[in-house]
Image 1 (cartoon, rainbow, N blue to C red):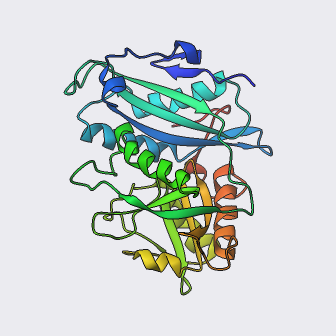
Image 2 (image 1 turned 120 degrees about the horizontal axis):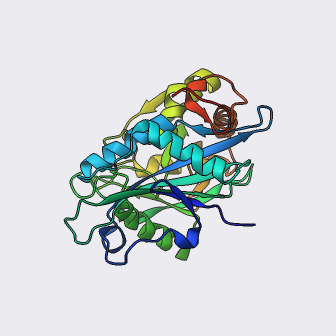
Image 3 (image 1 turned 135 degrees about the vertical axis):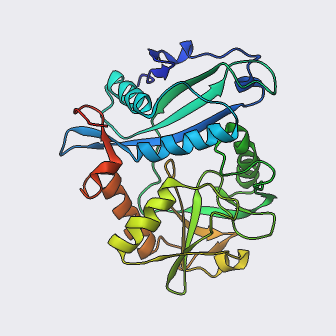
Length: 307
């Protein structure tokens, strides 16, 4: 199966041609910020829909602001760039994309010149009906006063890489971070929810977590309007996870990923629970357009669109 072409600074290029100088800040110091985007194929409509692109673009600009650099593309340009890379590759399947803004200049304090690329890729979904095993990582989530997780930059993910590699060595699928205060934070690239004593809970955004767009979708719409559960945002202790009835990770890449054991304690029955299953089904129906509510969240690739 052929690789997708990459959109880079206004052109579609082969992956081998999408290169950066080895002495650039982007390569040497990981001076970049990025967004993970999803687009979903709707067989009924014959259309590929990008999900909540405007929210991703807004978060990208927040990250660029914190990193003190900008990219010379408007929001409208970004919409068209996403549509160009999907249409140019004739994508008619679910696809995951990395939208990356980077600094091409050399040096730790370089802020220019800046560029942008979009890399579409196939990403396997979690097998329906199965969950992952997780552990509480010995690595601590970086704090807002160190390298803020609110800032979605490539350098942040070295924290997650250390935890993920250790989890794999220890025989787990995924790590879960605690923050510097010992409270539950999130996974490596996904936020965390648990069901405990009949309530759906997730750590607050002040607990060193990413302000996840998937998390927001669940809180604002899927949980209360489809599943019939309001979400409680609060601090969560480590041991609460051991006594939780259900738990799952969520994110644009992870979608809804059930967690069925933590530190080898079974979560609930050790199987995917009914709340997690309902949220997963409702979320996929929404992003794909089977659930036709919130059409403003779905940007078509092939049909004309008014931005």
